[in-house]
Length: 230
Image 1 (cartoon, one colour):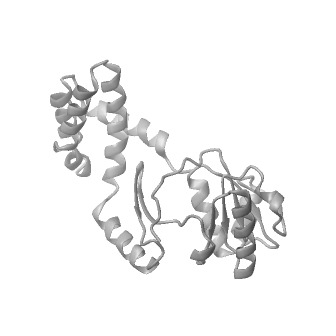
Image 2 (cartoon, rainbow, N blue to C red):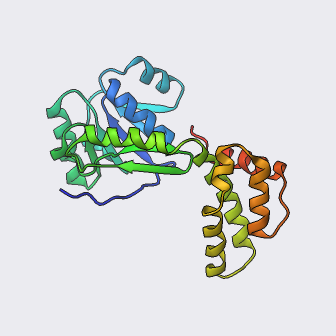
Image 3 (cartoon, rainbow, N blue to C red):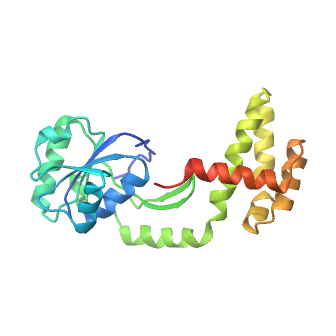
């Protein structure tokens, strides 16, 4: 089966996780990183999930799954150690039209979760359409070595620059030329080497404005605050 790739905004959205063990905990933590409001249904919670619930980061809304738990959820993760229970969750979700992922049960999924590499706002997703999760992990590990933390800094800087360029009021074609020039310049290499003087020089040349090392560092600091993980 071929899956349609999509990225979903979960900021402030309700997500239901059914299960309270180690697998469910990993799913919950990832969902929290992307801003979801997570409800958990499980007879028991792992110590870490209990702590998250006690601190108010997640809500423990029940011991046994009921279809009523789906109300308001934009998606569901069934992560119990009982394949039959996961299948029942999946059936209820399908009936109500709620996207569901049943961990390690592709036939009971309406969406699957790719292997992910995240560098700030850069998100690289790898999927084998469920045929070989092991290969997806191997490719992810390869990408992790190829795309280092400099990409997070570079995108934070580019996001700040983009706002300023658009604010000039030039047409889209002119703006695109600027963005392409920055991506193809030595700016990424300068950021990788933390050579802020060179980065400022490149920005000044391409943008036609005055840039100093302190300006670059200030933009990076502001960008990191906007895109930091929870």
